[in-house]
Length: 50
View 1: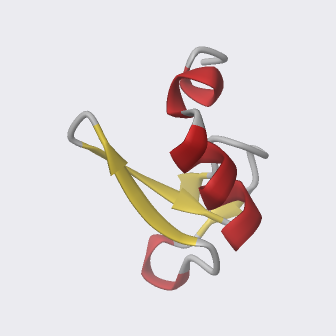
View 2: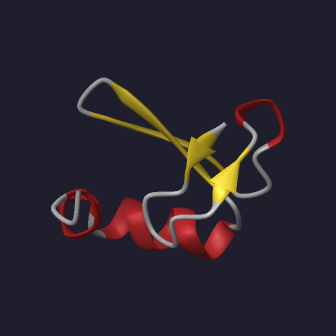
């Protein structure tokens, strides 16, 4: 299981409803298209929260 970097929900990498993005060589999976869109627009905003 992966954690959606936007909303912090658990996401199955094999069936991620929101798809996947790659950023700085790391793959990120999303629970919904809206989370992916927000991440793709400003990835650093969500990764800085780690």
